[in-house]
Length: 188
Image 1 (cartoon, rainbow, N blue to C red):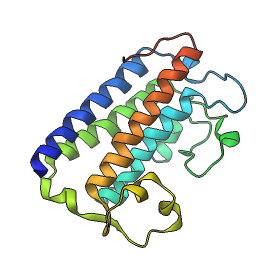
Image 2 (image 1 turned 180 degrees about the vertical axis):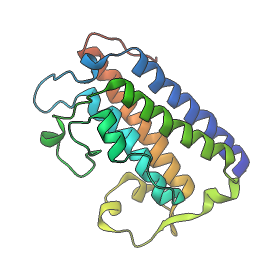
Image 3 (image 1 turned 135 degrees about the horizontal axis):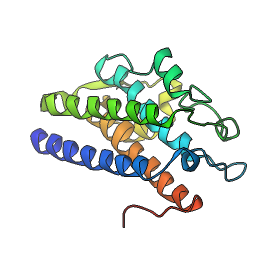
């Protein structure tokens, strides 16, 4: 059964990544940095947030260091070099991408690493607990804590919640925001 789950997860992840690829290739820097109004996060927030969260989640899931570092910050030139998970909307409304081509390179590197990891993953690893109960405060209030089983958050839970479901949530935000900048949605 774990082989079937892993196969499904691999296919869904590739499909989600293809949506992000379609989105980034059909937008320009003006679209992603568009300021609609106070309280409305720009596309730049959703894009950087999800890619950087996936990148940093790898530490908890695999022990692998994030790709994002000072060199990437110098290349991408994020106005706020933070995924914003623990910041307010009022702070993150100012998130902007400086070099969009470099951001695309970062996204592609993170997504390629994710797909390679899934391709090489032993299906038995999916049941490994990555965060046991009791959860620390910053995890206890998350969706993944609600999904967790009696032993804690498994690698499958983490992959589904932190990467796949979280990625689809932000893709929905991006599709909605595309309408605000004169672009259409991408799926039906």
